[in-house]
Length: 437
Image 1 (cartoon, rainbow, N blue to C red):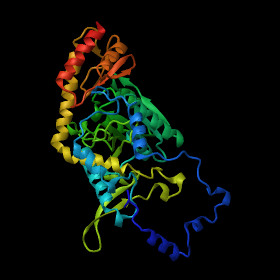
Image 2 (tube, helix red, strand yellow):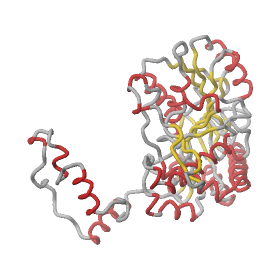
Image 3 (tube, rainbow, N blue to C red):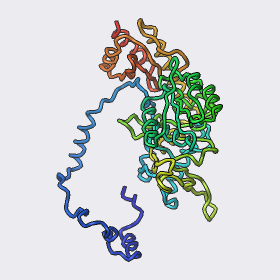
Image 4 (cartoon, rainbow, N blue to C red):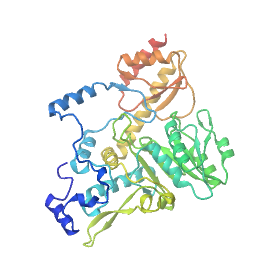
């Protein structure tokens, strides 16, 4: 990171002199003397590179790395091409913060612009922001941007990921707004129950597609009902599924959000992940965060700038629609590289392969005695099964270094991606068969 700070020590001294100062300490002359740290902290002595390496290796050994992952529920084990890891590792990209000085940040600004463009192509929307912290944050920010003075209630389908529901609730609690949960019917959003909840005070409806149980929602019908009431329709999307399904725009969504982790980001213990947000031109000025645009400089050359950022800390906090003041630039760059490397055909192939393998595993498991799908209907690459001895099944898989599905409501939520081979799936079925015998 040696070249990250663009000014030299001599230049910094010159800047101090130009404002009549000789030392940085003079910038803080109004700070009480008792607040200064004028002594060394009581810290242990530093370690050598070899000692640090050994300490970190010992910590890493505590991680359990499975040969096969059959668990999703918000974090998905897709194949990541090697170049996707190499490009974001370049020194000039190693920051998550939005650049303010456009004249020295053209590369980072261009990478964000490319990311925004790809998200718009993926969702069918007109404009995307520079990203937010994660998918749950994106959902909560979307609910906030949909509210106005008269419409303050957000409806959220019960088939949404529980963490997303909780995040929307947390945001709404902070603004004293109400969240109501739409019941499910056979694992999907109950259309009639939603219609009964819609009213003049409802600002938006949030639905996940595919939903937490892996099922495809009837988004067209839901969207029509939402718009008839005058509310906005927010669709939470799996970006890999968007490789083969209708775009949120085609499904009538006003705002499309989601977790960008499947786009080249490895499974991490809580992240860092990536929340993507996109909307139509009509709601562009409500979009939180930053939007990078393309323009020309005074010499007519292509240039990149922060086009819209007149929100958050730029106005009085209590009047801000959002207080997001940063983005996930490094994760967004990774996602844009992944999308560029995969291309439309590669993304569709990854989605189709994941879906086909998930259906194969589901069919094979359901052929075993006592195992059945809890919910019928079309699904992407996740499915919820009722099965005997779920704890024993998952323990048996664990012994073979296979992470089984997520225990959920006395069942198991399974997930399959393109990384899992048919031979491995057959082995899983054999292990499950023996465990439930």
